[in-house]
Length: 170
Image 1: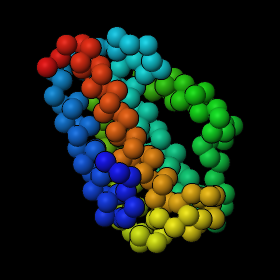
Image 2: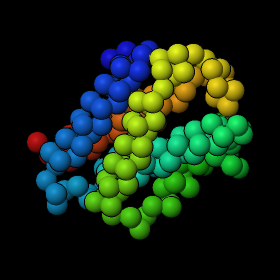
Image 3: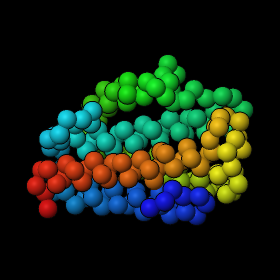
Image 4: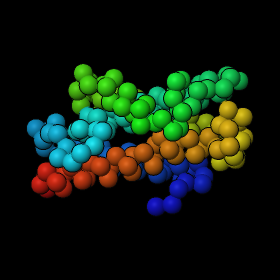
C-alpha cells in the first residue's frame, strides 16, 4: 500500500491499519496474548508493541501542541536526537513495564482517536505541503501523522504476526 498523499487516504489507511492491528490482537487467544516473543527484540511481548505505539502518539501530539502554539518542539524528545531513537525507544519500553495489555490498549485507543481528530481538521494542503508549518522542519504535518499512525501500525502488525506464527497460534 502506497503512503497516503491526501487527507482521505491518510484517514482511510490509519483507520484500516488500526482495525487490522486490533483484529490481529483479538485473534490471539487471551491467555496467549501475554506470552513472550520467541525472537530477540527490544519489545518482548504484544503489550510492549502497543505501548510503543501509544508513546509515539503522545510524542506526535506534543510536537503538534507545541508547534501550533508557535514554539519549536524537541523532536523526537528532549535529550534525544533522531540518531538516538534506539535509546529513546528503550526508555519508552522501561516506562511501561508495569502497564498491562488491557490498559495499554485503552491508552492506545485514546491517543489514536486524538490523532484522528487532529488529522480531520486539516486540509490536504496543510497536511501534505512540506514546510507548511515551520515547526515540521523539512517535512509535512501529514508525514508526521503517517509515521505515528498507518506506517507504525503496519510495523506493529508485522511484528505481532511474526510472534503469532512463531508461537504456532492459528
